[in-house]
Image 1 (tube, rainbow, N blue to C red):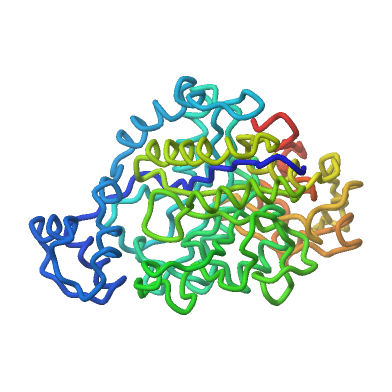
Image 2: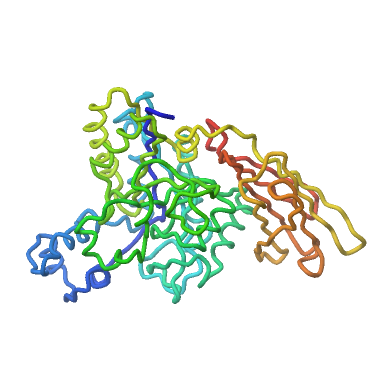
Length: 459
């Protein structure tokens, strides 16, 4: 929708994070290739800019900024922050052009399948998701979105390391999604990439299932960003070829950074409250300028819940107040992530995918699951999750009768006899971002169905 800037606050939602002084100096070595003896005294000198580093002083000071190192390292600290963030007085400290308060989008990760965990992350399926679902329900925060965030595993399965490939070192991705479908009757419609990383594997995966992707960190790189070794050559968060504007785009099949004819939408999403690719007044002004020109604009930014987010919110509020006054003809709207895509792009409404399910017996040992939808699914097939009677989760492909509309799956000795399963989950989005999840109980034949992200409802 032209002349409106949709403001989307994306949070990489990971729970508490601990970092020792020694670990901070390990990060400095990895980022800048500088070797210093770890100590609190040296850390304080670095924060004051009193250690000669051959021109790296300013960039290093940003990394060791006291605010960035003041981690919420327990759930108690996270919850103390949330108590204020989610309160009506804090949300309404600044209202948008439609007299509404701040909206958060919680992109929840599961920390699973790790062998070492020195940063004391909360390990377990659904832990972060359940924590936020509970606190949002308790606080009546129905305006907020709950979405998907995934950390690919490095080769050694260390919970504090980065990686780029989604399944080279772990099967946690399908495990997380299949469990969310069956255990929580939930499936993602919007995504934020872990470590800001997209590569061909994740690009093509997302293209099958998730319509909205708040991923692009395209911007003109600053000198301070160039000084950080981990950002060189596009190693992590490579968006060097992506459009440097605030208009969502369809990526190309072979290059997620180039506009093309894929299905999903990628939105630009810069950082606040961290050390690089930071949102600035100029970026906000660019968004308002593009909206004034009638462009579909989503101004998205991201931070983490393991740091105090309150200064980040106040910083963006200040930017908005400084810039918006120069654009009286442009409105701005605090938005949930799926609503922003629909509103900015004027996406046509579609009813939820039906995902009607039926079973047909073929002889004594084989049964065929037939699934259909009058509304086309976002990708050519829904997600298929299986849970065995012994509690093991699997996922698989359907046999595709008509892409986007009809599918079948055969239960026999080549897969599982239906009697060996305790649940079968099927999930899909439509192009409008409405999610349908249907779960079959093989023992009773009962099917439970739930929809998410309906307009005006994010329950």
